[in-house]
Image (cartoon, rainbow, N blue to C red; front, side, top):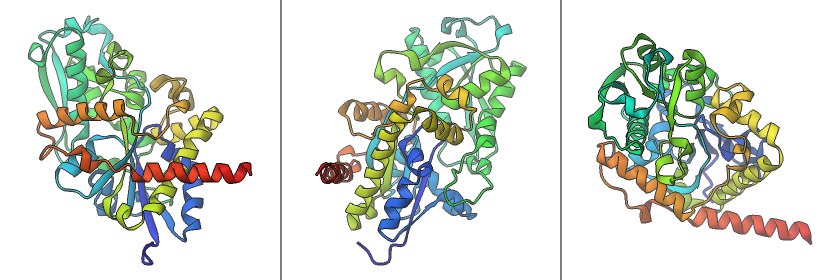
Length: 357
């Protein structure tokens, strides 16, 4: 292990993750303290360049667990980031309309204005990509294409980082309740005013928008039995790490992954507390966690590199490439590094064997 390594940085998205549970329970802190290393959330720094690493993975010695769009874009641009695990939890993924619009099915969207959200001041516009993906899938499931609707830009000059928390606590998430409540602000206003007829939404954001606007879901990609239909920025979620950290401190990375795996197992046994961590990280009242995701979400935090999840990620990759979000295609054989997960499982097996003996 490098003698100069004294801090590990981390960040997570406002979605259910075992990483969040590992932070909330202190599992990650304890593991790193054993190595004489301090764990710090990006939010603990007031420096926007540090905080922007949530999107660009620019900070060395850092972990990220969350939406797949930013890491894929960063890797395509030559960023030194490696994929070491995936997780997949169910979430709602509806197309929303106002009750008074008279629109009751996707077929009714023919010739209608569908929101295309654009963040003008962000170099990685993950929500534009998510909205495009969700809209395309919803239309395709109804036998339609983008040509059947009028994509209508809804532009926001707010940068994503503008909504980051003001807190600098060592473990706090960047994305608090204020961020989640305002994520689709411009789109919700456009929907209420009739400037657009429909918007795509998902997960925690959707439950907030529906509660505020009274919007109706005319379809939900999250209910599709086809895994590819459920693919989006939040499915699958990616656990990534600075590539150099693996090369110089493989066992350290593996021990962190082991702590995350333990957190996923703990969540299965502690539903109420696990969902409390999720509520905090997604900016939701606890009773909306099951609505935004699923009553079984505490059982859906496992870290793995299942072939079907990797195939789902490749569907997302191809979507991003087709719409010019990626600078170039990604070589997944080079991007995915299975060693930390394999080593983490070895460490956990050794721990359990020692405990039994």
